[in-house]
Length: 238
Image (cartoon, rainbow, N blue to C red; front, side, top):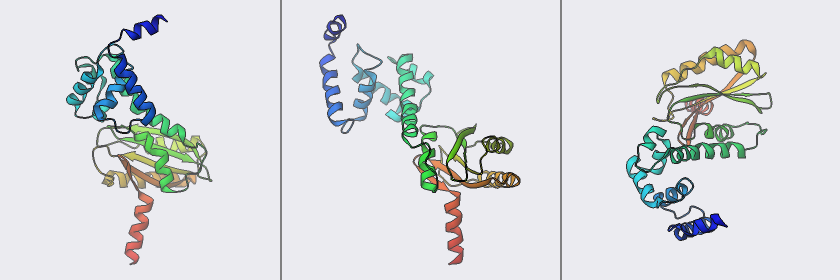
């Protein structure tokens, strides 16, 4: 009862109630960028007008997504943004990625590049640096593990072949897929990408483990070495 009375004294309670009702009725459809952020800030700023703060954050970083990608130190430098608000802003993209990954069936075979891409895409959600993953699978192409092998800079990530081979051997894999992202470029593979792919493929042969594919992600797009090689083969045949 005391909590209810305290809430009634909040001069913004009526506005917030209308925002809640709108969200429950329509979701975020139709919300402007600052309104979506304003509502998110309700949870960390219960007693202030979050509309003004939302505008300030977006003006500082240029967009809602850019604010969520910003380091905590930069977020807390914005007037009105405390550590709790900064943590919530960093938490949301990670929670979205966790949700997408958790929603997918864990024991479904990844028997096509598009299925593999859908499985891996959440791993790179909101990433500002290159990450390198190894998906280890059995003969039925069911994932046994998905391991972060390395995290690098905005335009490079190293592949330690021995670490990838060791992980594949540890879980008893017979098939593996390599995947990394290009957060600041396109899905076009670099010379290093081609070289490391060949190195890993050769290193796995003595163990009778097949490197099925190497996927490169850039935002919501991906390139499959397997598909690209097949298309190249067909173009030569023509």
